[in-house]
Image (cartoon, rainbow, N blue to C red; front, side, top):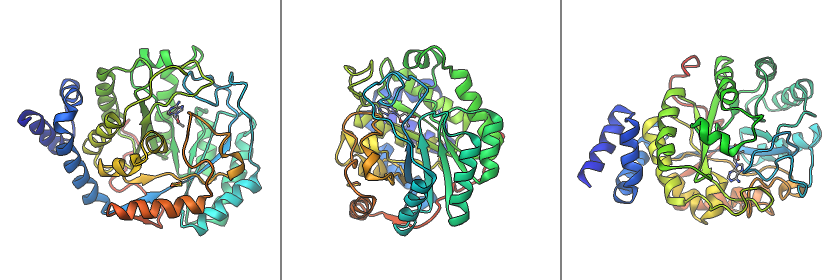
Length: 354
Ligand code: 5AD
Ligand code: FES
């Protein structure tokens, strides 16, 4: 026990461990999780206080050209009922979100060729013109450097692109052969070069993932030093090749959140919807483990059930206003406050180091 707590002290002080040391902690998480969460919570409070940032998620298309084996909107899923939101519909989501106190919009979608740079530039400019005090985060997958550049120039501030796994062999087991780990990382590098605040991330408990892989995640994250890290448990989707696989575990996800907070103290770290899906109190537990961001859904209720990346996703029948009320209560109960703010990364932003 003492040894594990010493390792956690070392991590807090030096903000990094070796892969072997991370692995020791992960394997012995039951014995040291309380101590980890005490430290990760303190570090988060020191930097971000009791403020919890919210991001309004606008899921604007569920068309996707990719065929990731875990994902419910993969192109081979013929049962997915496909939709696209128009610019007007997206602006309506933004209007509603602004009234509810959102100052960041996350435009997320599958890799949908319909949304050319031209169309996206127009949408981004329109949202920014109407809401210049809001940040726009894009989460629309792999695109070229030139495309990322145009979108940045149009006003996009941040970009989420989870790497999904830091291990190239593992990556191959989760993705079809036309997708490559190398290109994924190249995209993250390009986004950083262009001055985006960049979010990486991975699934916890995805098929074939080992504890060693989780330790590798920490080394990888330290190296690329992202501004945001999105992690959540893998949850099987009934219409994917992984439908019979086991879902990720709450306790492992929480432990990884704690490790991430100590490794990248300033990181923007969401307690994800997937975590709230496998445990009714998952998001609250995530915050107690060191998270400081929530990403409620702002998509029109009519399309929510169609954006099913995994089974049983929560809040697909609720209006955004209901969710925000629900979340405010949940968060206040544990001593934190949802704030009306863009919620930018606090700390020195080094865009080159990746
Ligand atoms: N379970 C959990 N998370 C998933 N994602 C996609 N499919 C699943 C699933 N079955 C995550 C991926 C992706 C993000 C938008 O959602 O990590 O990057
Ligand atoms: Fe959506 Fe509680 S957050 S209903």
